[in-house]
Length: 105
Image (cartoon, rainbow, N blue to C red; front, side, top):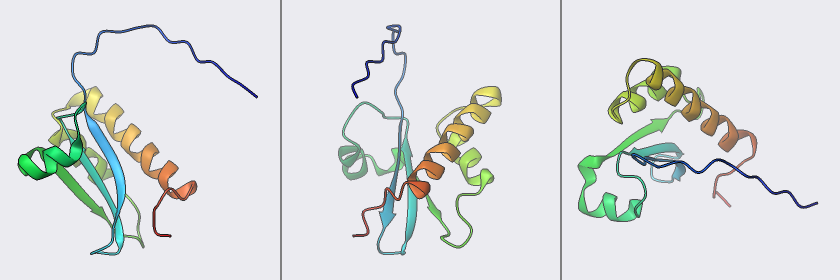
């Protein structure tokens, strides 16, 4: 089955990076985010560590809504945008765990 998704072209004002990875040192999932989206996150981590925000997620509890909100505010979102971004972050974590997107293996 082949699908084609067509979307309206929009001018991008600002890009953000949000990603989930396994933090092997702490044996948990870590949520990484930066307001420096659109570039290599490894370069940001190496050269501008202060621009990278990290939330470690307790494996017994999962991502808590306050963590998603804290991350959203750290990226500069507020009000309605913060709630929307927090919902996106929670959804990404749910996808990561439900589809077993870890690289443990």
